[in-house]
Amino acid sequence: DMGGHDTYMHKEIHEQAEAVDRALRGRIDDRFSTVHLGGLNLDARDARAVRRVKILGCGTSYHAGQIGAQMIEELARIPADAEPASEFRYRNPVVDPDTLYIAVSQSGETYDVLAAVQELKRKGARVLGLVNVVGSAIARETDGGIYVHAGPEVCVVSTKCFTNMVVSFGLLALHLGRTRDLSVADGKRIIEGLRKLPGQIEEILANEEQIEKLAGEYADAKSMMFIGRVRGYPVAREASLKLKEVSYIHAEAYPASELKHGPLALIEPAMPTVAIVPDDELLEKNRAALEEIKARSGRILAVAHQEQEKADHTIVVPKNEDELDAILMGIPLQLFAYYTAKAMGRDIDKPRNLAKSVTVE
Ligand code: F6R
Image 1: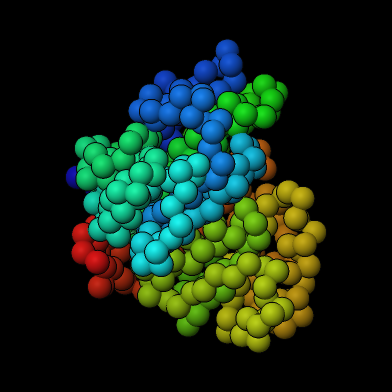
Image 2: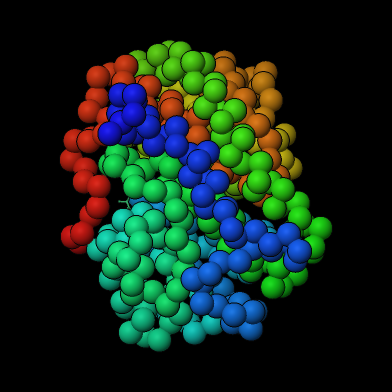
């Protein structure tokens, strides 16, 4: 039942405030400015013994993992990174007992992720799951974990589950941070930021008409560039994937800082750029990248916390805490991908050549 929406993608995009609310419910502990994650199966001593975090997933879940790794580094100061599960399992990785491995998956059935988990377990590693589907294979094979509680996701293209994964990583980063050096004051600040998310998602979705119009303006592009840096880079990668999947417009994502090392050669009026421009310590750097693009007559659509003078259009999103901004900045670009695909008459819920869960190698 699509409840008045024309596609599951549209419905699921609009369920995000409610889904995030569900991910937060019952987990926040104001007394100690931390969160409780019931199924984690990692006591404070274990949490403190973690020397490194390695996150494994595929596609959108891998991108959620990249944002998660940044949050864990920032809030818990544990070195963390994400890698596609398939790459990890084929390169004979060094498996280290002091590393906490986290497998991320909506379905909990993705073969490459499951195989990575099994290989890690065989080598004695500690593996947690960050999964949506309760009781799925990856949820069962991991030592513990977090259910992201996005609810059923029917559209092949992941939207609300991505958002809930990133929120769940925020919870985990806060939890790990508070067993280590994150102060009570910073813990409080992050909790306040998390509590603001559902309302801010509603604000973003209320801007749907502007986004629909913008999608119409850019739908003629053969190819689009997505840029961001540090916190904005995985957001750019995910937005680029979303556009490709549903509209079949070619898109690629680059760190804004890498533009001048090659991809700037592609910039011309027919190659628009979507730029993620958070109002954080990198704002001036990001503005400089917009100037470089403008100087080559590139069209720019910015997603930012305030109007960007150098951009042709800006989608303004509400500001949260710097560490949590990445959760919100991709949401308008889900709608952008949806409306672009709609303008092109694509089969939005079932893009060609794709399946909802990839249970083969
Ligand atoms: C993109 C998308 C895919 C999945 C990937 C992993 O919109 O849906 O990239 O994210 O196939 O699937 P799960 O999360 O089920 O392991």
